[in-house]
Length: 145
Image (cartoon, rainbow, N blue to C red; front, top):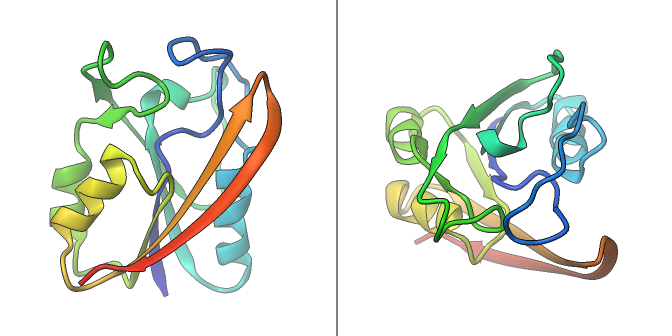
């Protein structure tokens, strides 16, 4: 199965506007989630916001796309607006068997729903970090009709 995993925010910062600089994304939930699909024989692409690109170059086990963001005063690190997501979805809509969108109540998830109607399933995950500690995890499931 060919899977697109849209996960704009790979990790959280101390507030909505400040992101820590990290050397690698290989210890993030999103990377390991995608790695699980790869290890089960699927082809996967992780699509994330460029603001979360690590400071050091690294090679990945699957395709990782870092999209540039804009409107940062309104769409901060918590809800980044990725510039080319819409065009990427439209150009590859027939090549993906499944599109997974994290942060179910985000701009990225809305973009996925609007640009691949009636074709894909959506699986959203949202979690809440307070002062760096894991406090809540919620799964949301839905079918895009």
